[in-house]
Amino acid sequence: MPADIEVELHVNRYASRGIAGRLKDALAAWRRRAPLNHVLGDVHYLAWFLPRANTVLTVLDCVSLERLKGARRWVFWFLWYWWPLKRSAQVTVISTFSRDSLLEWVRYPPECIHVIHPPLSLEFQAAPAKRNADRPRLLQIGTGPNKNLPRVVEAIAGLPVQLAIVGTPDEAVRARMEALEIDFEAHAELSREELVAEYEKADLIVFASTYEGFGLPIIEAQAVGRPVVAGNVCAMPEAAGDAACMVDPFDVADIRRGICRLIEDEDYADALVAKGFENARRFAPSQIAEEYAEVYRLVAGR
Image (tube, rainbow, N blue to C red; front, side, top):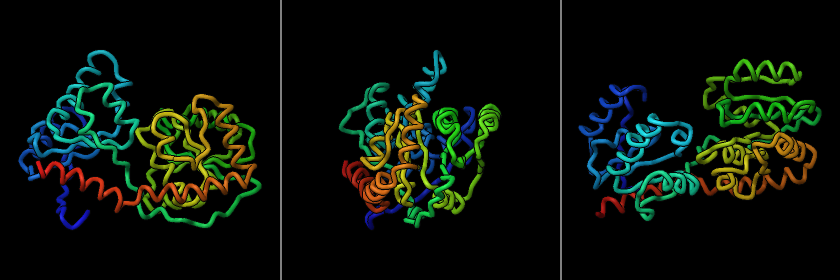
């Protein structure tokens, strides 16, 4: 942060489950309120009792609203979005896509919503690639429903590749990979150093998600110097710039096309890597910190 911004960090005491722990943490946030308060992460309820005039709220995405139905959706909308936004003088979002999604669900002054992208951690640095020509190593980040692993598995069926997965695939996906005789390995609960090492060992990164509020693994891969296959939906084109091979994440054949192109066309892959280094510079921590500082100054000035 710039020198005029003094930061004090508070972490939730309770996990974000049930009403009791969340209510206690919301009250604790009120007791620890400062001249300016910024609620980060998927813990919007911390803003319930904070003074509106000096509170900033970050909204990552609206995916839960889109997945929930009936009364559960209404309760979640009220407690996670409507009420916290009413307690916030300014809101930040991590992508233009997230801003547009938020405005579809909640009435809020658009001029008070600021798009500030996530910062790229400095531990992701350029690393020389060791091409595995005979059996390229593909890195799949995540195994949640939106990470699209089942379609990726179908897309690489029969290809001479190795699939490294960050996360734990469910039994159905694991059984399908074994049936297709896919050479795979899965890594769960990696340390930060181990995660960076997985990027460095990969020949290309597969991030053909069906939903992302931003898509941080795209720029992490770009910073390390690896070409990326990314989904062409939600915020991923915004994160990737023109430095990734964009595919339709709902089309197995298109995912396969993108992977094969990066494997077979080295000139294309190298061009994406060069563009990726340039794109990743947009997310330098110093740049992102200054953008947040401008929002803080705006609120403090009021």
